[in-house]
Image 1 (cartoon, rainbow, N blue to C red):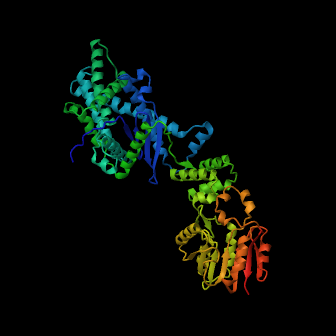
Image 2 (image 1 turned 90 degrees about the vertical axis):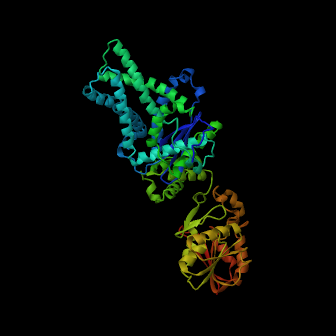
Image 3 (image 1 turned 60 degrees about the vertical axis):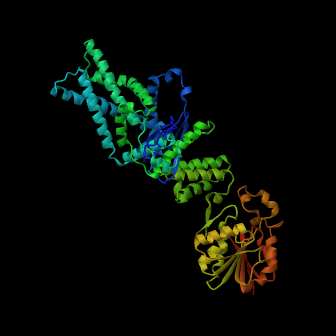
Length: 597
């Protein structure tokens, strides 16, 4: 494929980070990182446009110095932020001690030290070492340290050290992956500049070599430094001033901003043309990019595209708010965050917070209170999202999406009533009599929890009925989820029921209509059809009493769950039958058993 022509040049530039790419536009910056779970996480930031900066900082050379310093500090910060997206390990005792004793964030300390050590390494490798090696070489080839040849040879040694450094670091696995992300960054920018739609397939066609690469900038810095220092050395020689080794290094450090400023202007100028006349200047830097960029995989390209598109959107729309990474967080800290969110919404019960963190992290509820281990960003994001929904009044188990009933996972949402622990008492008592030879009807099945538990615990033939088609959809999903073979019937009580059953089980609506308005806010979000039992709460029980006899086999048994204080009234509805009241674990009359004899 021939070289694609650039028709849509942009000032957007970027940087490869740990498992991600940062893109920087005129007024915004976006960093996209793929976390350990494979999700792309984004952090954005608003930055000052060139026009917003003071005039002096926009002047040629000076703007290059400003950008050089800004790139170093911001680059280190972004690298550390991308690293924070990871981290399953427990914070060290030293980290905890620093945080508690001095209120110090170790990440900020590490970032500062990294910047200092990086500068020290750069000075040692690219200033002192070339000067030292050239000093050893000079007597062998009879070159004076004050001659221009000394500076030229020192510059060549410096470039050789730079190339060797890049080659050696490229052997490291993490660096190699960073170079692949570097390639994804370049190819994405090139794709946009060539006027192609930003898709993985289009990006793969584009070159990973780019005019505005930091590698080319570093080469220019070294090349310009040779010329600048040779000129300065010539001036010193003219006035017969001798510069000692340490002063030579300090002089180079002092001249570095000036060199960076010139290099920036040259790089900016070169990026505006593809003329063959400037190719000799571009070529060495482009050759080095063959080392510092590698062909990315599709996932890396997706990350780079995500950053680029985010910057385009933010530059075009100044009303878009910046966002922060969701990063790894210690379990106890996450629990505190969730508790605060719920408490601010008036939810004081800490059990909700513990359930949210425990289920999000797949841990026991008893573990999360004291656990210090870092939880992945996906877990943190899930828990915080659940806490936000719960704070808005959504029932806890609707937020989570499922609950446990009698040891079985039951999906729940706004279409069905959330199964309560007391309903398990109904299953516990009924299954003592039910065998695989019996036929069972679960009336008002809702989520299908009772039917599923009875089927899987006893092996009986089970039919489940409900007036709500939406509820039956959920019940069918739950039966499939748990591998329970159940026949579901759309029926208003016994309307569409055929045949007789050895057992009929039901948890019908039993809350008085006038009491519904006084229920907890989250309970009122459950289906009214599954809650409203009429003016006295017994409307459905009366209908059952009128028709059940036809569908209950001789010597058959019916189990009905009821509300507090209703059991005796329900027994009165079945006065001609043998009845029994069973209390729940809290001593409340909860189940009425009707036996047909």
